Each structure stands twice: as structure tokens, then as C-alpha cells.
Image 1 (spheres, rainbow, N blue to C red):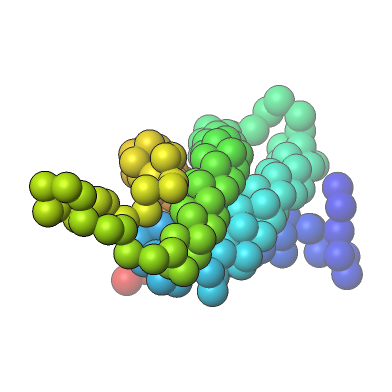
Image 2: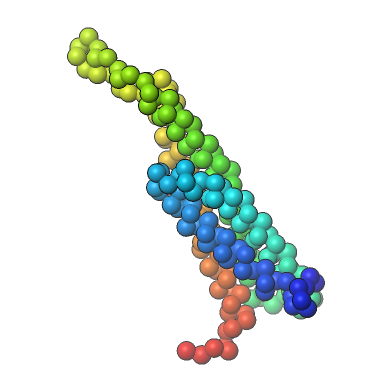
Length: 185
């Protein structure tokens, strides 16, 4: 079992995913729902999308060592097994978010590049019947990009919500094991 200053690593390591996943959920939701913020918080959110699953895996790994040391391999109580299962659901949710996130971010970058290209273009001339042509005509992918971004954004929001839920469930089952029955209200 890994230790730091003669203390088990797991109780110390669990604080990293608690902070990082919570930040990912908050920044991720802001990134998806508030387009003007995307350029400012995009890098932070992208880093969190990669670091949060790594921290969750580190906590799972140290937790498995801690449980094996405490109870013996394959002899975990049901509460420990439930805590472990919740943590794995969190990890798989975070891993599923990675490709969805980077596809959305890439499409958003393409959208912004097309807007910059079209921002300096002259206004379209009226057609023969007097109607003005739609702006941004040199970006043929605009409509498809919007649809795909909407779908990916919805999936990313669902995954962020699930990550928040599994973070809560994992933390709650862990806290119940440590503090359940000790602190009375």
C-alpha cells in the first residue's frame, strides 16, 4: 500500500478528483452554455477534461490498494465494493467525455475561424428580386456544424451532469464508511 508520511495515500488522493471534477463540471457547463466565455476558459476546461480522469484513476488505484491492505484481496465489504463501483462509473463517464469534448471544441474553433473570415467580407449585394443574400455564404459547413455542435453539446452536458452525480455518489459512499454513525445530528 502506498503511503505519504506514514498515512495511506487514498484518503489524501481523493481530494484531487473532488476538486478537479467539480471544477470541470462548473467550467464545462459555462463553456458549453456561454459562447462568449469559450475563448477565455477553453484551455482550462480542456486541461481539466484530461486531468480529472487521471486523478480519478489515481484515487481508484490507491483505494484498491487500501482496501486490499485493510480487508484482503477479494474480501471487501459491500460498502467498499459500492464505493469502488461508483468511482469506476465516474471514471468511465469522464473518459467518455474526452472525445465528445474535443470534437465540440474543434467544431467551435472552426466556427470562430469562419466568423473571423466572414467578418471582413463585404455585405452581399441584393439579388435581382431585391432580396439580400444570406451573410456567411462562403462557409458551407455552417448549418451542419451548428447541428453537430448542438448534439455534441447536449451529450457533453449530460456527461458533465453524470460526472457530477457519480462524484457525489462516490464521495457519499466513502464518507458514509468513514463517518457514518460517528457524527449524530
